[in-house]
Amino acid sequence: MSTSLIIDVRNRLSWRQRFAWDASTAALWGGWLWLWAPLLKTGIRLASLGIELPQWVPTLLPAGSPGSLPLSIVALAGTSGTLMALNKLNARRPQADDALPVAEYAKHFQVPENLIEAGRNAAICVVHHDAEGRIAGIECRAPAPAVAPAARAAA
Picture 1 (cartoon, one colour):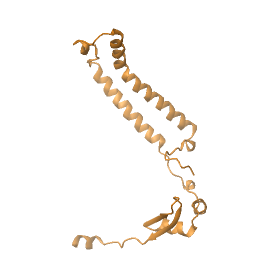
Picture 2 (cartoon, helix red, strand yellow):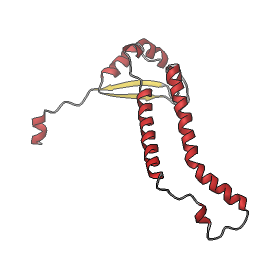
Picture 3 (cartoon, one colour):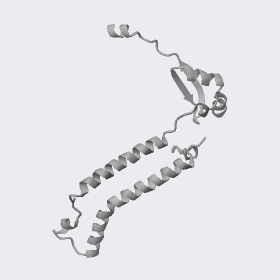
Picture 4 (cartoon, one colour):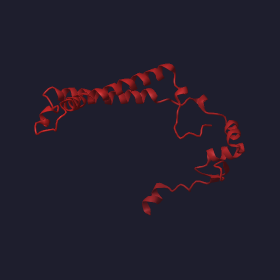
């Protein structure tokens, strides 16, 4: 098991999903850089002047033109749509055969199988660890007794 805090499950994605993810990431980075282009062009113009900046500097800065609002709305809708599509693309539905058998978990965590089964069936399960971070024990607590809705309303 990896000790990294970063979850990397690219190996579980199909090559089409990885390609779509990488292509959309590159496109979004390109869009992000494209949005910065007017400011960079203005900065290059100012740097090429090489003089102290007078009062007329704000006239060089790009101002919103009448056509920029529809383009901004399209960019916002496109980005939102891309993010929603990526969410659907990356959502991996768990399959019945994805779950490992209890014996695999018991072997990996060095815990008896009956404790893992008891933990799965308990409503509250406390896992105790030793100084090295390994599982030292599993404490399964009985769930709180269910209170009837009528008794809750009377209280």
